[in-house]
Length: 217
Image (cartoon, rainbow, N blue to C red; front, side, top):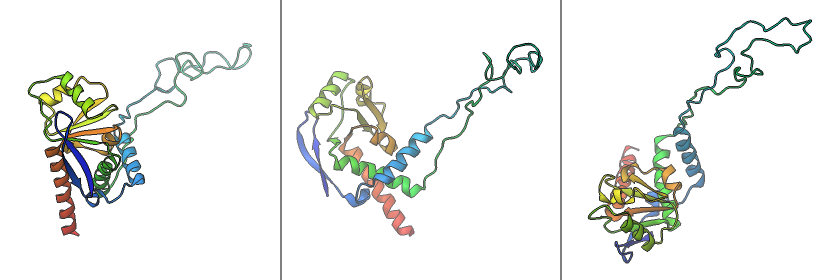
């Protein structure tokens, strides 16, 4: 069992949360995490880069002058890649960078990324992460009390409340809904800040998925 401290809004430890490693994959699996990370990164690529080759450029298709007898170098038409304003010889074309991955592997990678964070002590849990009104100053003070000095992913059940508004203007702080946690965002930030009810709900949903999978098999 992994025991993660639970703090209050003053930064004081008030409790601890025990997490079973087996529910998160048992052990950290670097190869799986790397594969899932690369997939997420590739699927975020737009793939719309496009440059025009000589057939797509506008201009005369006639040879500029005859091949022999002028004393000049040989020339084709204006649209060749060696001419100013001509086409691109090896131009980029739109393509899909999407990579596939089985659903079971995707889900396991998400849980395993959480396990990696827990093992490294990079999960910061607050019993109730709530602000009466939006306050960037108070949220920044909370980060200092929790010794969060690097990039941080804040997972919330609601990304439109005063807590989300408090964190919106801070540098290296990104928000995500707890039900949208993914390998890319977890591994792309040093810390994960989450309140206890949201994390417990996420863990319970993962346990239910595993139980349903066991029944199907």
